[in-house]
Image (tube, rainbow, N blue to C red; front, side, top):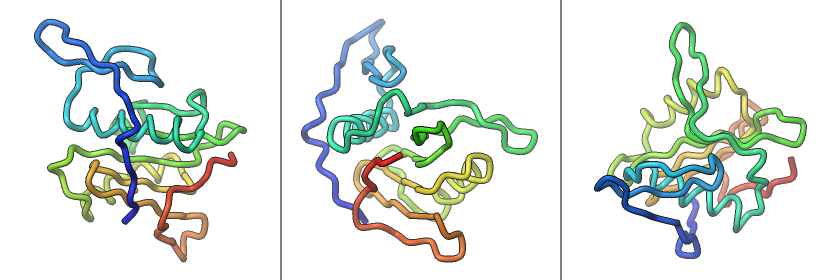
Length: 147
């Protein structure tokens, strides 16, 4: 498990029609603040502001085809040649990071083929280097962006 301090992230919040919204720095729009969105926004702020991942190479909640199904991944970071590099699956804090969460990420990975896998629920954060599919390595820190 990776230890990350999200305390430096300052989310822009507002109330709209009785619902709390958060400003998404990647999508550049206001989003309803659900528990999962809260985790996703903290992760985005950490990737962009602490690790210097380029916001212009991050996609959030984009559609991907899984066989006949259309699903939406949480976060994909692209390398500088616009190939998927890191795939992140974010969950609400009350959802455990387990084999079900990993299997969901792996379904997206089958379409996107990212080197790094990131699983986060705000309490637990795991990241794997899947460059060698026969020897996946769970990391002790998130990778530096060198895309």
